[in-house]
Length: 86
Image 1 (cartoon, rainbow, N blue to C red):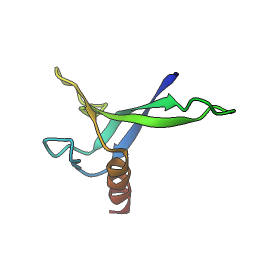
Image 2: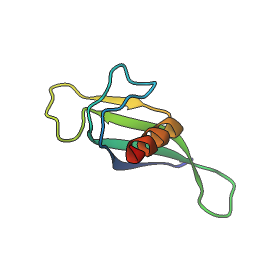
Image 3: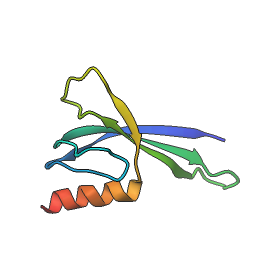
């Protein structure tokens, strides 16, 4: 079974929080890793998401400590949409 990881960034214009986070996070651009697993037995390549990982702190913040926090993909999408609408 094949697993692929894709790294991208997400940007929040305002402070935000998610259920998996202990504290309010500042506005900024954050690294996001999405892990997907190949669905076997199909005649074409198809994948389903197995993990969505948000990397803290934001990209521009210099910190001695960093975290990789598993977050709910739907909740993250909703938080990004709310941020864009505000």
